[in-house]
Image (cartoon, rainbow, N blue to C red; front, side, top):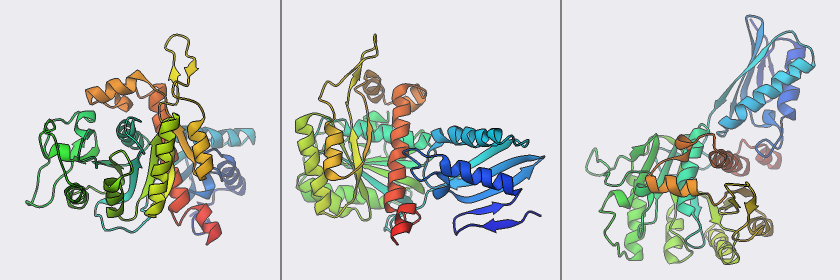
Length: 371
């Protein structure tokens, strides 16, 4: 039977040898980047070392989805063993378990992230859909709620036009599911070609009903694609949702940044934390020479993030593949999972969910230091 050494409430090692233990601790502490600024060990839980046929097996759980990092972490630990001339081979089993960071009244949802923009035309809905697929690709379960009751675009972007949700009891609605992504939109409830002329109270009521009465299936993250702008309807919708965080999508263009600032100010007004900023259409990559051209300006998102003391979560290019996939109701994660743009969305998804953990989860090393 292996002895156990308890280092804290977070870490328990099944002791194989002092050398193995020290090598794993050191390697997981030294693996640092944007996702792990304090090292992997600072956020890992249920860490165990066991021996299997003479080889060391390291098992632990991470609190946010980052599937793309698993191989790099494994190679880093293996390199540490090789550098120390350890005879035993080492392998890693990395699990993911996402916890809710806030208490809220919505069944079947762990965390809610509002995706917003100060103005239309910056690619907010396209970013929301691609983020949903990217979070799923990174190991999280996802739903997306189309809060733009005036012009719902989710059915088109998911390739679900003409689909209607079922009601198991005449009150609640089952979400429409595409490739494992749970979705709800007013576009599923009426003909998408009908012009919708809604008064503010009716619009907010429809949104609230979709949020509360949809039978979400225990998803880790619900992304709410907000209508563009910062008017009364946006304020009302923001106030209707309890215990959420927000993300602002903008372009580097000056006028978009002005409106993005208004969006940040709006969420501050209703006490909804802003996790960070996503700069869309940051640049265009020439298909022939691969040079980057900042068509809508340069460094605008970075400057705004610094001015507002929030993270710049990522910069996405203006890419025809994004438009083509959206028009065809396809996911670039399925269409070209190893393409540069698909990998960028995966990186953004992990950065976003990591920021949610670091900023708001009580288990975060940042929050433990201040408690």
